Length: 445
Ligand SMILES: [Zn+2]
Image (cartoon, rainbow, N blue to C red):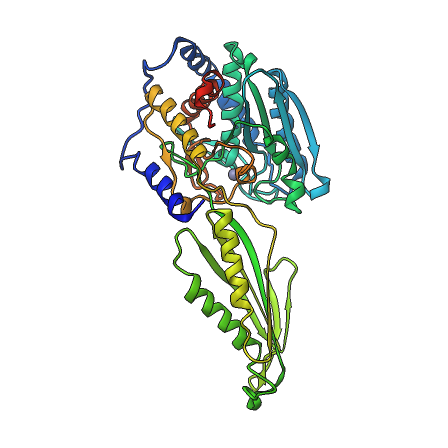
């Protein structure tokens, strides 16, 4: 898809929401009788849903705490077993993490993929470990919105559909990954189950907390890639620099490349690239984690080597490939007697804008309006981070994310959930799944 049409699709969705709207929590009469029953089932299980959230938040499941990740997976697995799913724990030894929970409920309806994650950024040695109720409407806890709240919404929506006999006709696959916050490598392995589960799905729904705002959903995410630039020069005494047989040295070559990246590539919409670390001199040693470098040199030498590491964000595979190609071209225009290479690491792909994603957001928006809980617009992609859902882009025609539990300050010790949204967002998800199953015309062609 071309950049211009991407922008057009995205812009159109932003117009859907007026600023400063307060979200009404009242129920509405826009629902079919069958839908009203599902809503009533969500309400009937409100206290149990909150208790489940408290229980899973109180189990540490930092990505590196494999026992904790498996323990949270076992709790959700038991819930899904009870709802008639076939559940399976995929061991993550091959990618160095705990593993993933995969569950399937067969049915005649279109295949719908629900995506969550079991891990959090809070490891076992973090001081932030417990669920804490702050008042009637809020609670704080590690991973409460990112994303155990979203996982509970997923389970509770399915429970309400099961309790009202609606799940029977539905084909739902659930993948709760154990390493979203710190993905195992290679990504082809750690994300393989997710991509496998996505095959043949009509829609994929991610229950991340997104922007934390129930008036928004994520339909576009930028991908993230790491790059490493290395330059080399002919070492020598500084007094001889620029001589025809010696050239400029590695530092000038690195400076040329970075300045040209800036001159020729900066400013394109949704494209970000930033050198985060640079080291250059006579000898450079970069750590395997790319977070430290040691360097030796002198004032009166011509530098032999430079290493630069950086990050790049792109909105579409097309923007990623085009930018990589242009960077490689720039790198290849060497200054005299220098060398340079750029490598791009295994990255998170973008969730590019698409009509299918937009259509799924419209359906979700319609559900919310019918429930009396207000409009839902797309989040500005420059504010949406990378997430698992991007790995099914290009496989599933309709994708939405960021419709998990609302709140603030994820990835910090102030991570807080808006508990009033737990039943609201559960109802929205349950009705979205129901309409996707019972209204085939709602599916993208
Ligand atoms: Zn998350």
